[in-house]
Length: 360
Image (cartoon, rainbow, N blue to C red):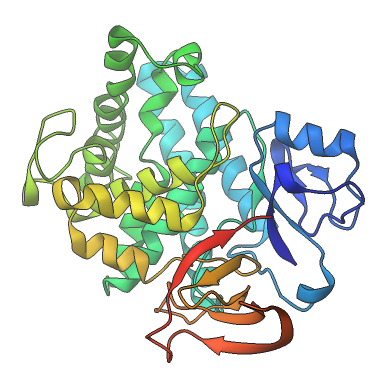
């Protein structure tokens, strides 16, 4: 399979990766020919790129980082938790959190098991979802990225469990925010942004009053928008005043936000999202965390067409784990045009660099 921009799909090309809709239901199944109507539908829904089947890349495997069952179980649990808190009285919120505690802990354990069993660096491009409940998919993605970063930083099992719970609950305060503000496609007014920012303190207040979750988990909700230069909120903390886990979640949160499909903007590709992180890391993030992130997440996903600095072009076939910006590439073209394909391992050919990604 190869990764292509939706706008460049030709009618008749075959969808290579299933696209999911609300509640994990299949919106478009892999293997179907894409018609003009379906292509237009994808563009209208904000899907920036998809995988299609291609003769030259038929053997390239696109492996989801977590199973469809785990993703469904995790998002269903989050949906149930948020819905129960919205409907409950303040004095019963603690009971609602208690009920879901064991389930969330089990989900974090399952995520870690599947990440550890994943043969390559992680990428969530394989999990293309369209949903109005963006917050649940986002919370799960942030948990996956945060746990990958934590593993790279050699956190122990107990720390990873706390980090995972803090990550999957980092936005729980948004349960108290007006949905019209949460889902507004345009820029928020100053008053609306002030309301939006309050999700950090409301999430903290909710979690800190519950004996099932540690103070660390509560502070992940409280501090994940803090930045090391003091420019964040709600308290303008600096440097080590921000808990390590909140800093990790902050990096994962920004990356997933800019690389997720939204109706009102194009999703950035992984290398673009990473470039954004590096551009602000000097002021807002601990560079060690950004480096750990880079070593965990596939910068150039399998199936992506790339161009080298020597003008050779090819497609990413597989990843070199922990060297995530140096994949294995099948060369298909040189300056003169198409050639007999051969492999290049960028982890060993350090004089060669990727200078461009082609989604056509």
